[in-house]
Length: 97
Image (cartoon, rainbow, N blue to C red):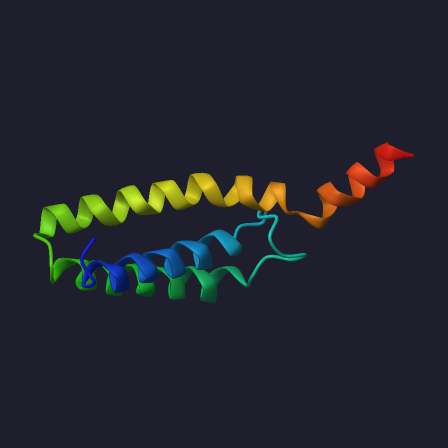
């Protein structure tokens, strides 16, 4: 992986995370982020990520990379949240008694 791809991938991570944390079903925070600002901010970050990925890659490849990475994030984030959720830890402690 070239160093030029890293900013685009990190911006995609930040944008995808902002949009995910605005979801009412997210498990990373006690309450979701305010929906409109988080979604607008995440969308802006994704647009900047596309521009950053378009520098070292062709446009079609940059779009494919961004969307594939975003799909991976949106699949993994709920599982990571469920794995480390404080609600899950409380349920495990309650079952141990």
